[in-house]
Image (cartoon, rainbow, N blue to C red; front, top):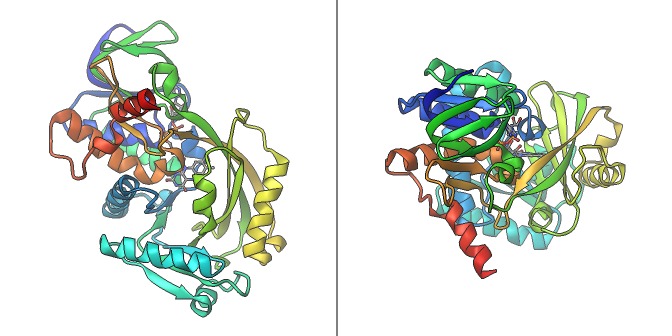
Length: 376
Ligand SMILES: Cc1cc2nc3c(=O)[nH]c(=O)nc-3n(C[C@H](O)[C@H](O)[C@H](O)COP(=O)(O)OP(=O)(O)OC[C@H]3O[C@@H](n4cnc5c(N)ncnc54)[C@H](O)[C@@H]3O)c2cc1C
């Protein structure tokens, strides 16, 4: 391959890179997206596909809500294999202390235009009969949904191709900067804009950013249609997802359109191998069975692991990298990259083209992270 000029090279065809390629191509740019593996084969293939509004911070809320709405707008265009379902989330409260959190979350969401419903113990059991007796209640967020991430990434890339984007699979970037992407076979691609969208590997191509791998395990069962109706997440999940040091597990189950049930989830730092860790898997399943005892009688057909790309402040890096005007980041989405891919791409493309962004981009700009580290 000789030197070809493009307006933008997107490195990485996970769901985030795929969304960026599409958004930039839509703005009329000559785009090429490259990936060393296959489309949607990284964290995207490992993810749960929960499209969820979260409120760890106002910035996280803004990005997840914006993106959830973009998925909703796109739903009629999504092919069947993306399996998009607006099944809603129920945040399950085990006790009265967690019901206080249910009420806080309800007020926070409703005051920002997200419909929610507080469920008491009886209503919760009516909606999800396989949950154990004695849970205090929950919060239903009906506009949340689920989808099958690898097919969603493929759909975004194919739509980008329809808009004129080129895609190169099996192309590993070894260096990016100054308007040039160098591939492992020595080929170079030049472009005024380079988007680093390689997820957890992003620091390998862009020095000075802090992203750590956070390992997760998931289990999928055989088909049991109707066993679960909503994505169910324990409110204790918030505590475990917040913990940045220790290994944690939380009850988190998802109904798939196939009738299968996806069971999560775990979080581990410092475990870089992709092998299944039986002790954390056992803890995760134990936790799931505490909430849903009948899970014990189902057959699991597959277990896998994946790596979330975690930043210190739990917000992704979206926008110009420091020190090189041609490089932009779209990485570090931790456990929310499926949800936030579409909003990430919109924000980045708006920023690059000088258009008005729908939500402020500042909380996600890579420059904020550098400032934090300097003062840390
Ligand atoms: C267990 C688990 C559960 C999750 N559940 C959810 C969920 O329910 N909801 C949600 O919103 N998110 C969830 N996530 C997070 C979500 O999966 C990720 O945030 C998202 O997939 C990140 O997408 P990405 O495109 O940034 O990265 P990736 O999907 O990792 O894509 C990066 C791509 O870059 C390519 N690449 C890497 N290096 C190079 C290179 N040098 N040159 C060229 N290409 C390269 C890789 O091959 C890969 O295709 C979960 C994650 C895990 C691990």
